Length: 431
Ligand code: IMP
Image (tube, rainbow, N blue to C red; front, side):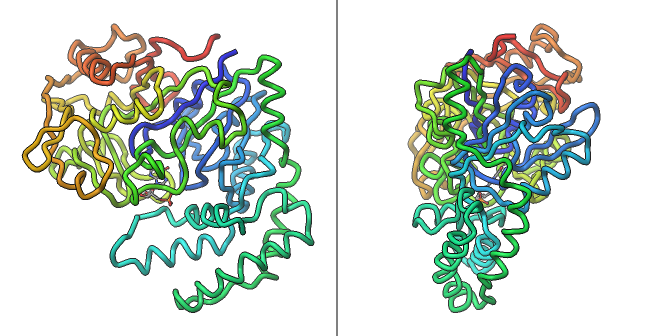
């Protein structure tokens, strides 16, 4: 059975949650492999709105196994809240549906404190993080003072690890940020209370995955954020702290790259971005406000307004390349209905020269003036379209132009938030 990776190919918020939820019906296992609760997936199931930040949306499907991989940073408080909220809404009937890697790192209260203190103190170099402690948690992982899920099962070691981590952190918090220090005893007690509700889910998930794959299970690796927020391949430094590209599915889940059969990139029919950083096709006019309202472009995690702009094929081509995409899934096509003209950016003019490659340095990208092609818009309400042929001709021309520019097929098109509001041209997983 095929194993597929789903990644966002813009700056996150591409609507991955809905697509992953839909595809989960045909997968046996759904794995998160990077990021943390900086992500937010809003799903609408039978008119019920469900927001998930950490647990893969496959949890809404009975009988599926959901894995939080070693590459994820887990806020234990959020994990427990999410489990309890799902249970309260009648989902997640069985503990066996969820496993968390013993090697996943924890987001500690002092990580959140540091993240927020840094952002508040920044006069220049503000990233506009979600304030969830993601960066500091990955920093601790890289500097090898992080706390892992494994540590929750060994109280003596956990105490030692917290003290070790806090030695430097408290210096930074008190002397650099003028904040109160974190008390190791309190941090330990807080964690110990939460760990009672978490340890039952901890497992050697790479071994579990390899066992199940060898026996024919079909796995979907669910990326969070988007390619342009990747720490190497994104618009550094205005990025997140993990690798958001498809290659990370292997390292972040603990499988080898040859276990992956196909990679699908999700993109909105236009572009959005939250937080700071360059955005060449950004709207500064009424069109932006109109898409923001019509597309309800407000962050699921922080509630911040998303900046909106035209589809950027230059940026998307880079994402197609760094992810080796098999196909693209376009979301929110319905939001474009009513615009007289649809623009697609096909090149940038930088210092008088026309280029068709996405620059990797920020000062150059900041000077990029987008060059567009214009296509005629469509006015029909397409939210009830279920087959490609149901779309008006101009909507189809727009999709076909994207296929031509990206040189990969558009395999699915989403025309609304509900599972049913989807045109499936080629399903990535067999029935
Ligand atoms: P962090 O991941 O909280 O450190 O934030 C770093 C940057 O990534 C900020 O610009 C955030 O707005 C952005 N970001 C993080 N997670 C998401 C997401 O799920 N969707 C969109 N942007 C995100």
